[in-house]
Length: 168
Image 1 (cartoon, helix red, strand yellow):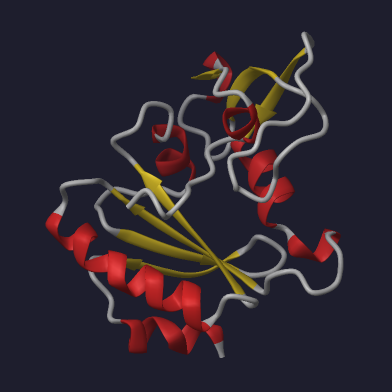
Image 2 (cartoon, rainbow, N blue to C red; image 1 turned 60 degrees about the vertical axis):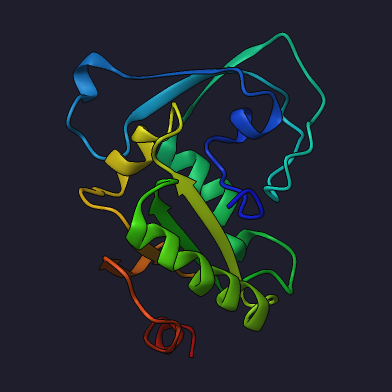
C-alpha cells in the first residue's frame, strides 16, 4: 500500500512535525481539531512527500483548512482534479486489502480527473481525519468534489463499477 500516499496535514507532509490536539472548547465539534506545526508557507500540497522550505515559525492548521488547501481545486490552476477519493482504512484489514485494487483502478482510469488518497488509520495522527469525516468503520470511502465538499460516502467494500458512477 505504500504506493498510495496519504496526506495528513500539510505540515506532516512537509516535515512530520505536527502535534495534533483538539481545543478544549472545540471537543466534539466537527473540523475543529488543530495542529501546531513547524513548516513553511511553501511546500508540497500535491501529496508526493517532498519537503518544503522549513521555517522556525509555528502555525496552527485545522483539518478543515487543510482539506480546503489540499483538495479545493476551484482555487487552483485549470486542469486540476474534479474529485478526491479518500479511502479510510488500515493495513491488515481484509476488506481494506480488497479496496487496494479498486483504488489502483480508479487511479489509472481517472488519472486526470480523480486524486486518490489512502488514509491509514493505524498511523499516529490520522484519527483527527477520521473524526472530522465521522468515520466509524473501515473501510470507508469519501468522495470530495472540486470544491472539497463531500458528495459521496460509503462504508465497506465497493466494486470499481459502483464507485465509477460517482465520477460521471
